Image 1 (cartoon, rainbow, N blue to C red):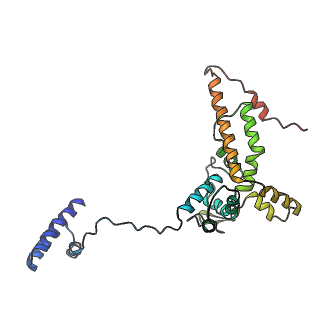
Image 2 (image 1 turned 45 degrees about the horizontal axis):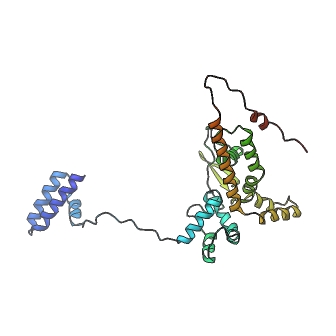
Image 3 (image 1 turned 90 degrees about the vertical axis):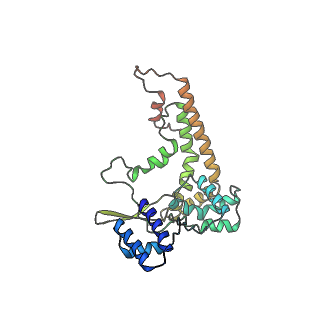
Length: 286
């Protein structure tokens, strides 16, 4: 293809230099005979000016740098949630974060954040989303998804088996992490599932936090809802995220210290650590 285009450039120069129709016809006959291309196609290519590399049309920017910076900060506070889960948080938490002094934005920027479409990650009533693959037992099932969002995504795959590590993990679950997940981490709930031919089409309800689902439930008493609302208004999601990150840093430091202080004999069968006993025990009643 490259050689043919180079040949066409030479022919084009000759074609426009000659003046008579007979000479131009001879040039066309020569090129068509050597390349096997049709005469009409060659004439169009000769008369077509070379536009050079095509310039890609730039998209019009919808949001300025202030909006992008604020969005990046909010995205970090809410643990880098996907678009479907971040959208409802933008609608409810932008003003609170601004009042708490966690983000500094103008009213115009706040309005843009609340109405942000996040491109293709808008929260819509109809979402086709696959949760797992058929005949793939290693894929997370619906119930076991929390094993990823509440365990592996937070603590990773390192082995924590000392009393100090267990204390930090329990502290997170009993305090910051529990509150953060229930009040500021929306989840997607399956609305319907229909098989269409060989595929399963799933539709999901708009993402909501567990706290929002409780307040909308008819099975929860009004006094309980008011109590939950009081807890919600007293919380600062940015401060919760910082506290979680600090404790996770302490946990990783404890893991590193454990590796430095313990010597492992690869030829000796290791006995279970005492932390394993504490992990399986029920908490004592007081």
